[in-house]
Length: 214
Image (cartoon, rainbow, N blue to C red; front, top):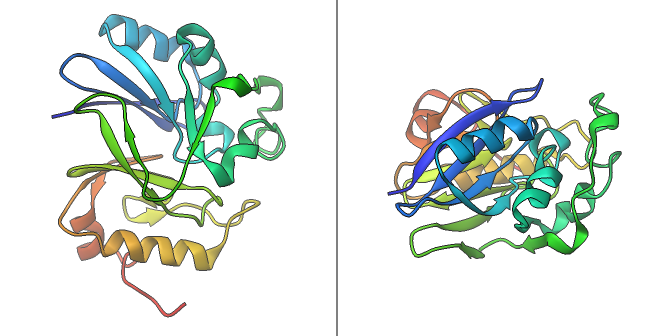
């Protein structure tokens, strides 16, 4: 069973997740800001970072990545359609969000890409299936491990991510939400902002996961 630590970071309080197995091998999902805070938590818990995973490449979700890569010499994984965003202060929205001066470009040699359906395996237990869920950004993706799902800014508790940023698309978002709603079983959903939720809660009380005419 994986251990999940949630850390809202930065002015926009994007949720950074430290996900570890029994041996404390760890992946860092969406390190959006405050690298010193993330580093302190990793050190306090004696966790061993193996990689950084991005649900999408808006700056509020990877603002601390350059420092963490430098510290641990670990790769950063992002969907191929968001790859260019990571290396641009403008395309990643750092400038538009008012964080242009804080932007640090991650080491290009440490950036890896994934595609829909890939399995990302970092240890025997620390594995994730990739679900490409565009709409918030072209490469927005969710990571699933058994009954947990990291949804980024695709799905929130009782809400969804914005589609009015560059690269956003309402038709893609509707398809992505329908795909999540059609997943078998239930999952605890760790969202990119705000509180956690479950697929069953969103199917029952929300209306975003209901398939719509596209």
